[in-house]
Figure 1 (cartoon, rainbow, N blue to C red):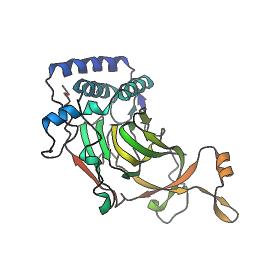
Figure 2 (figure 1 turned 180 degrees about the horizontal axis):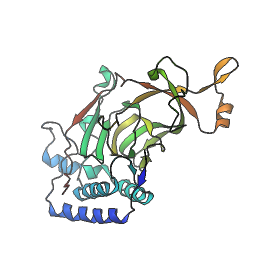
Figure 3 (figure 1 turned 60 degrees about the vertical axis):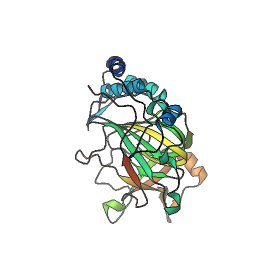
Figure 4 (figure 1 turned 135 degrees about the vertical axis):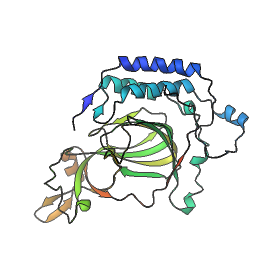
Length: 300
C-alpha cells in the first residue's frame, strides 16, 4: 500500500488556533474524567480534586483533525513533531483525571485478571482518541496496529511496555518463516524495540505501520491512564482488525535442529529477536467501555 506524507505544520497551527477560538466560545463544565452512571462523588469534591482544561483538549482535537488524513497516509515529520510536543504538555487534569478514579481499584483482582476500562473521547474514519485505565497487574496483551500511526501518552501511573517490529515488514507470502501445519501456527520473526518500565510524566511515544514498535504489550505496575491517538482507527470492514500474538524466544537452525541463542550470540545478532505467533484474543482479557465524561469536543 502506498504511503503518503502530509503537507507540514502550517495547516496544523491554523487548526489549533481555530480550536482555541471554539473552546473560548463554549461554556464548558469540568466533570471528573470518565463516568459510568451516577457516580457518587459530590460536585464540590470533584472541583477540588481536578480542574479539566477544555481548551487544551479542543486544541489537541483540532491538531489531530489536521494531521490525520485517513487510511494509507502517515503524518509528515513536522506534523509528528508538532503533535508530540502538544501531547507532551497534556496533563491528566486536562481530562479531569485523578489517581483515585474507581477504574484503578483492584477489588476484582481476587476474582482473576483485573478489569481494563476504556473510554472514547472522539472517533471518526481518520482517527480516534481513547483513554485506557489499567489497575495494578492489568495486562493489554501483545497486539498490532495494522496500517496505523499511534501516539501514546502515559498520563498517570507506571507500566512495563514491550514492543516489536517485524524483521521483514513485507514478507513473501509463498515463504513461511517457520514450517507449520496451518497458517495460524506459523511463526514470524520480530525484533525487540522496547522492553522497559515507564512512569508518568514521560514523553509521548509514536509507532508507525512498520516501525516504532507496532506490536506492543502493556503491563500496569501502578494504576495507569494511557492516552492513545490512532490514525486511522481499527476497522474490521477496512481490514484493520486487531491481531494478538504470543512471543517465543528466538531459535535458529543448527545441525542438531533448533537451539536457543546464548547471550553472546544475541549480542552478535544486534537487535534482540523473537518469534511471534498469532493467537486468538486471550480469554483472560477483560475490558469494558464507558461513556466519556471529560471536557466535550466541538467538531464544527
